[in-house]
Length: 68
Image (tube, rainbow, N blue to C red):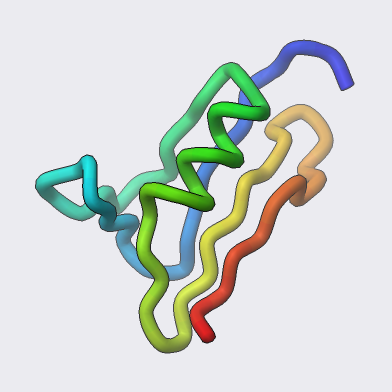
């Protein structure tokens, strides 16, 4: 994949340890590694919540994290 944008999205508002207010819109990042690490480490999942990193150009889900 070439350099493109990656969208961090969820079926619930995104909330995490480095973010004061929940995000209601997807977060767009230009670096795949940064997008995946933000999704994996920063954002918390609650019951029934899923967080995804999506390559915007292709729609491919490159990372998915679900609540246990």
